[in-house]
Length: 269
Image (tube, rainbow, N blue to C red; front, side):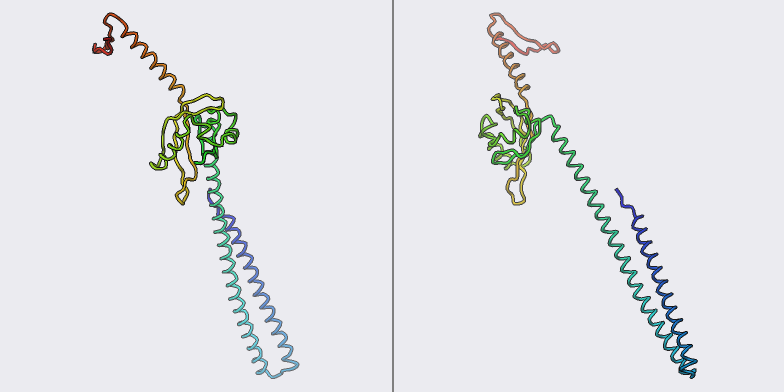
């Protein structure tokens, strides 16, 4: 958004035009006053001062006084114009600064709304929490992951995160200490207890946000539910173990060969 100079130019033009009119009025008034004084002296010349020398002396005095007054009036008027132009310049600068502040505010608001939209619609759980054990904000994905109806219910219901959500409460304090000492983001696998009593396995990504005095302001992190992946891995491990047990129980030789290079991959005793 760029500041248009046209309104300020119109304002300056109007002020200058107004000053020009005032100046013309000032000169006209001075000329009229001079003419009136001269006429008065002409009348006085014939009735009171027939002496021409005295009259001319008075005329010169009047003209000189009129010129001095006009010059002083012009100087005052020019100073007034300069002050008015400076005022218009200051108004223009103030408007420019106000527009810049408005643009910055709108940009910050747009960025905040975009961040809020990402936070609210993220497919993984996101949160800010206090080290003492309360949530500041959570997104809908985290509330749903832990079995709560809404973020507000999760925030109001959980007053001690370690005791109410962690299967092993000591895990949280250890994670905070580790994140605080190593700096940056900490990633670890954690087991959480849902509202209904069920347990989920999740990857926790955590970092500490600090105050200017070096104390912890809050914890920021996100949680990704990997229970499904862990279930698949556990099932695969069980099937693999069963296959090995079955293979070892055979009384005749059994082996598995790679079809590409015919190397033996697996064999029983």
